[in-house]
Length: 320
Ligand code: NCD
Image (cartoon, rainbow, N blue to C red; front, side):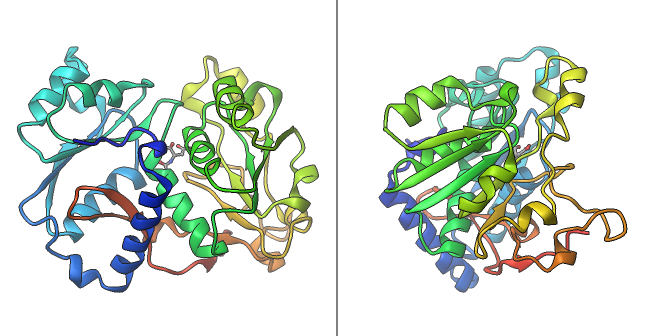
């Protein structure tokens, strides 16, 4: 039995197959309408979520299956002190597969070792978020047509941003990838990623503090929010939260075909101010391809592998 904890649990060939499958699901949804008939998905979310949980559930429903689960630790027996291992043992007898989000790094891994059904890590603390990465890779392949020969700028909270960690892990397997890591000193990529992933594999990267300095060379700008819930004190969060605000002035420095991705939720890091205050990106008619997450849904194939697909359009989104 396979679990999904980290994007590296899939080979690059399997990821390619999943993305081809997602393309086919987009084009022929009817073909897949019963692929999970009679199957149950448990979503066990010990931490807040909008897109991730609902897209898992929507996908299972789209594929003819059904769902059960909880959306917060407070509404589960975790609030009475139950361990993740006890919870998953029981859920294993109710459902066929489980998607789990947890504030503690490694909790879904612990669950997988006590589970008799596959467990998907839907985000564990500031660690990994492999299904977001599948969606990111799919977006990049759809918009740029490739996953190699790219310069990717990752901007914001690179310390606690689990989507960033998973995306780096996944992308280093493709040829000629270069990273520009844009963050304040306090929010740098953790050393276990810098040393064990980037340095070890001799992947070129630079670390900069100013977004403006990085813009001209990027093919992709991956913006992230500062992860308030992972800070030890509110003062540090308040000092850091508006460190980066992507606006039209900064976009003017970018290549014509640079794409901006954001895993969402967006807080302040992409400007929405109107013309009279400061120019918003859309008002400057810049080419920002904003990922329409409201069209994203998880898709599920008959082998129990999960990916996300979208409606197939990238949009010039009005952000204001
Ligand atoms: C992210 C997450 O939960 O890690 N969102 C998501 O799942 N799409 C990003 C975030 O919370 O900042």
